[in-house]
Image (cartoon, rainbow, N blue to C red; front, side, top):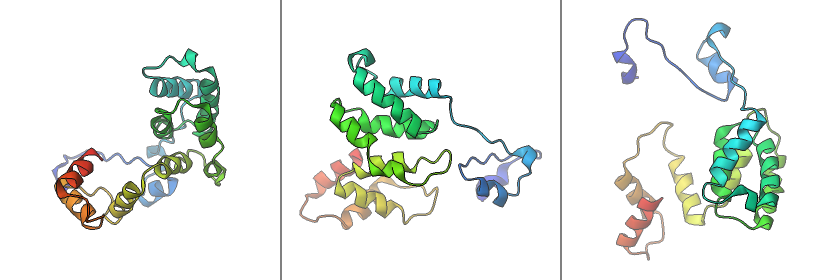
Length: 176
């Protein structure tokens, strides 16, 4: 709340959300609400190719490109979902890996338009166990909490395997 004290007369607050009920809670009027749609499919495909095939040439992987078009459909025009999925797939050039992710049951969850949960969950499911634990640990902090890296590493490793030397824990923690 203290951040809002420095505003000048006539200042505005911009709230972004994927959840329309947040706009209702914020007591905005319909004239102040802008409903953004997802990116057009062509732009999504262009973004996906740029993110996924940074170094590789996409024409060397026509089968992956074809599966990539299906991923673009599944991400419903949401750039964050595309980016998360591209990060997940980037190190995978085996078509079977892509097919496994494409056919994952996570995509069959009931979704609203613009819902990116399946893409995020697929990425989360690829985490090693210790990173899943860290991610879960971070969920106990309030939204927008400012983490101190060293303190977070100490908290995290206080609950992790004590047989790992402290120096290695710190190095691993900083990498993530």
